Image 1 (cartoon, rainbow, N blue to C red):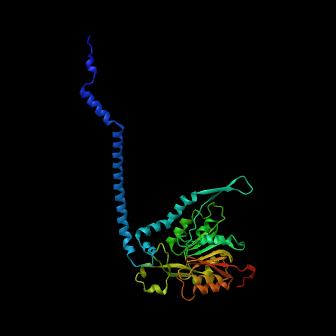
Image 2 (spheres, rainbow, N blue to C red):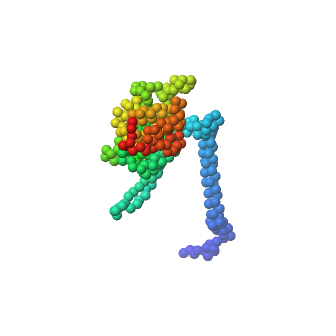
Image 3 (spheres, helix red, strand yellow):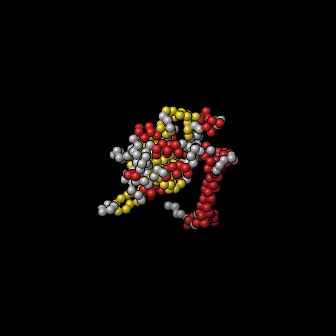
Length: 351
């Protein structure tokens, strides 16, 4: 039988040195230092990638926007509108992107409040006034203060474009109004259909009708020359005018679109004599269209028309004066839009 020496159980000087080294390596201070080095290393790598991303974005912006900003233009918005990046972004937004964003954010926020005379609760959602300068809410507040029973809840939007950006009809369609949207450009009208499909009679109960008309409203029926502008932001396409004949790129942007006279339009779409809103954005032809509606005896409760590019045959002040003689009073100018209110009682109208 062999016996284990006691001396073999006692650590040697060499063993003690190894133990001290291991203890020093596993000490809390050393572990903390190692963690700090790891964190700093990760931060350096992240900053490197972040800086590369910033440099890439800067170069992209410089290539696409800097040349545009160096051009002579009326405002920085006009300059940005010429950038391909901005144009692509706006185009995607007009083609349903902006509406989808609102649906997935603002419209998913709701409030509850007690229902009158019941233990139940009502649910309300948030919305956004998409008109150019707050025209929609301005009109809504005006309507809430007056009797509107003789006016059909209908908005006629002439020059509807994509039916969303700066639209005077979008919010009213959201609120359940009937609408007739008139737009001669096929692409814009399809965008309007896409933007409004969720709000057009959402419960399919037949209580709301939204119609889309691919045409322009003018003095005649048939086909007319139309200048299609490459401006997804400002949206200034219009009927061919004398000033367009001198443009070098006219042949590239000239198209033929169907035209309807006001008389043919109101007959075909059964527009009632008294309806809620007539919105006109016809890039120079608004006065003519407005005169035709009024002269035919139609009395919308509110007229909203843009006078930015009106022909010189009648100034905006003269239009307001003409409408005053037909029972309208001028309320306000929101952005580029003049807003007038029909005040003459139905029994006192003589046309």
